[in-house]
Length: 216
Ligand code: HEC
Ligand code: HEC
Ligand code: HEC
Image (tube, rainbow, N blue to C red; front, side, top):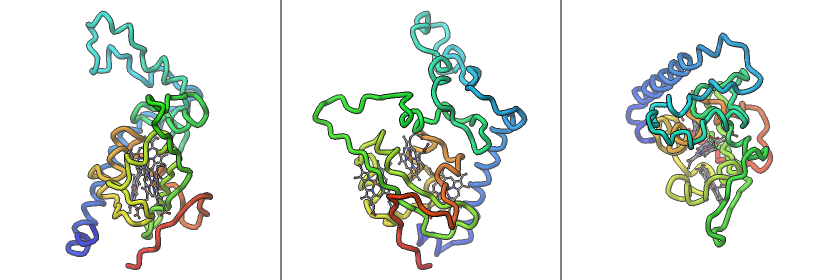
């Protein structure tokens, strides 16, 4: 990535900015209806389409009534609210990390008794560069290892050494690194502040390792 930036830094930067603008415009369009409504207190069932209308299930299947409708169950879980306490209109609208931490769900951790569950309470301050006014990116191991094994990420996707992986937003937008999951099975890339969570100057939470500063 760095060599690409060196060879044609301007074009690459323009490309990143264009991609990010496209996302932001998409986000504004997607969220504009909720911007005029007052923030509701409990998740309204209209947040989720019934299975018969979701374009994924066959509405003519007589056994469809054996399945739970998303609104019946997902409305009972902590809602995914944006920075203004309004429902996000992305994904399945559940704050899954909260649902787990607050005991709303208690998924089975293993099928085989010999499977070793490894939960790691370690944050990595990913940002080495000055990202301007954008807060820095803190990667929390704890909520990830609650769902995933170390081998889902190490060593093929991320090195076990803070700062060793050449992560960039462009690569993430292309579906690499964090973008392998975020935007696919975990909260989407439009929720910038969930990753860019620590403003410059704000102290880091405990258990945080920091990548060595970049010299260029
Ligand atoms: C899934 C997590 C995640 C989300 C969501 C996310 N970012 Fe990033 N972003 C990162 C990581 C990781 C880096 C690399 C940080 C570093 O090495 O300095 C980064 C870096 C950046 C950079 C620095 C330039 C670069 O190429 O690395 C910018 C600018 C940026 N992000 C903007 C955004 C914007 C705008 C959004 C929302 C539209 C967003 N990001 C959403 C994880 C995320
Ligand atoms: C969702 C992906 C993911 C999972 C799962 C994951 N890690 Fe990481 N890990 C990362 C990222 C991202 C970094 C930072 C890499 C970088 O900065 O280049 C990291 C960094 C580390 C580091 C370096 C810390 C330092 O002091 O430099 C260690 C050690 C580590 N992980 C161990 C583990 C272990 C043990 C597990 C399983 C219990 C695990 N990781 C699970 C993504 C993950
Ligand atoms: C292997 C899949 C995977 C990768 C790779 C991955 N994540 Fe995640 N991440 C998840 C899942 C699953 C969750 C929990 C579900 C959710 O919040 O949508 C999660 C949750 C998080 C949370 C906690 C959100 C909360 O509600 O507290 C943050 C922050 C986060 N990821 C940032 C990152 C960053 C930054 C990277 C890249 C350095 C990254 N993730 C890479 C799968 C992944």
